[in-house]
Amino acid sequence: MKEIGLYNLHQTGVIVLNDTGIPYFTITGGSTSVRSNAVGYFVPISNDPPSDQPELDWVPRLRSITEDLDHLTPIAAQRINELLLEVSSTDQYRVNENKLDLSHEAWIHIKVVAAGDYSQFSGFDEFDAVLTWPNSA
Image (cartoon, rainbow, N blue to C red; front, top):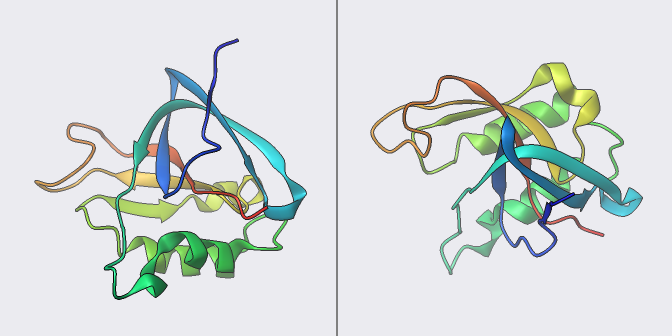
C-alpha cells in the first residue's frame, strides 16, 4: 500500500478528508505515540509567527492545549477554536465536536468552511478535515 508519512512536518496542516485522495500517516497522541491515518489531500496552514514574537507559533500552543489528553475535551476544543480564529485566510476552521473522542495531540478533527477571496479552498462546500502538526514525543 502506498502512503505518505508526515513525520517531517514542521508546521500545522490540514488533511482534507476525501476517499479518492492520498493516504497519509503520522505519529500523534504525544507520548502515547498513536499511528494516525487519513485519506485526502494535505494543505499546509501558513501561520508562521513574526520573528520577534515566537510565542505566537501554533505548534507549541496547540501542544499546550492537547498534551496529556487521551481525547479532546469540550474545554480544549473551545481553546483550539479560539486559536483557529487566528488563521490568516478567510476560511473558517472549527473543531468537529462530534469527533472529540477521535481527536488528540497532533490530530484534531475539524470542519472547514471555505470563504472569501483569499480562501485556500476555492469552490469547496463545508468539509471535514484533520488538523495536524508535529507530535511532541
